[in-house]
Image 1 (cartoon, rainbow, N blue to C red):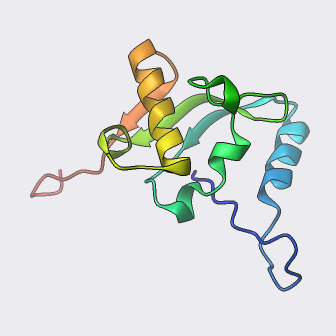
Image 2 (image 1 turned 90 degrees about the horizontal axis):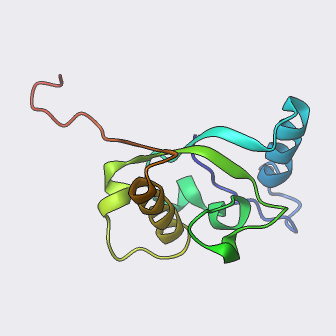
Length: 119
């Protein structure tokens, strides 16, 4: 659920984990090479920072490589498909979600319940 690699590696006071290493270790321990599901709740930087550099994205060869982690199924809110004026990690996630939606594989689009009575 979400991915925000915001650690400052050369700052000894930064107590955040080395997220890429921790996730690679988790995959190794599980004997897997991909995540079954990666869900982004929204495209704010504190929920997606560094995703463009960590994950394998099918829509662009430049975002593929042996060191990147594949996503079997990408879950995004509907807004991640429709938002405009995005850049960086947010643009990349939107492009991947749109690509998968167009190709008909590996994406689930969700939205928060916005009905007036909460049902």
